[in-house]
Amino acid sequence: MDLVFTLPNGKEAITEKFCYKHIEELLQDTSTSNKVSILEKFIKTKGLNVIEKFIALLKLREKCIGTAITLTIDQKAADVDIEVLLQSFQEIINIRQRKTIDNITLILDYPKRFCVDTDNILSVIHEIHLEDEKINLNNVTNNEFLQITNSLPAEALNLIYEFVKEKKDALTYSLLGKVDLNFLDQSPVIFLNNIYRCIDDYRFREYLFILSKRIKDVNFLLNSTFFDIVDYMELYRRESEEHNQKLKK
Image (cartoon, rainbow, N blue to C red; front, side):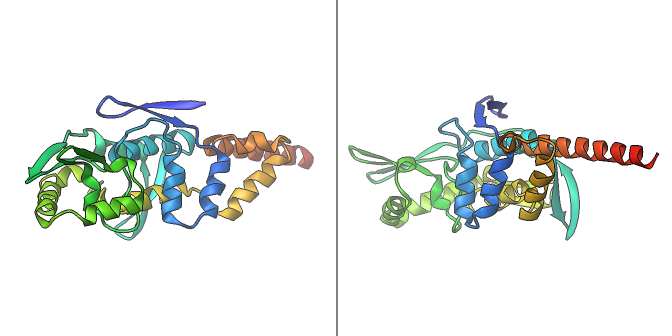
């Protein structure tokens, strides 16, 4: 079942349901770049920028795992509601610009890809126009992206640096005034990974083992959301307590 979320700019983001089995997939893969690829696959709407993707994944987490997350603020753990965090993203302003120098035209905008390995301000480049040739950098491989951007002249790079400096407030967000996210580095990816890692391997297997005693269809459990699993565990706990009380009488 697909889920539909409305973004602050009025766009709709369609995602797949995030199920219990998908938690294991994230737990097993230790690569940050692979984890963000796994999460991005849940977004079915094409062409979203990283801010829109981030908001969609926050809403998906809220719907399928739960609204409460734990953040480290001032070196202390604090429980925060996702709805509170979403207030930081009430507006997505239009920052697209067209910059030209000599025979090179650059179309600059929010990145389409999450930056993972290094800080990468060049991810704001969407298209490069060279005379009659138009290169869409959203449709090239990582290696091709590096080759193309490394060949840009210093003057073009200066235009990009100026754009990033000018649009800094649109590219960086401060959650609760304490947690800083820069969409030109890997901080949003690390944040998403942390809030989707809601349990560890041991707890994942424990819940499955306990509930499978009551619900024989393991696939049903694996295809449930974590939100549902927590409800099933609470029902199982109550049932066990009632059973134990009857035995004592």
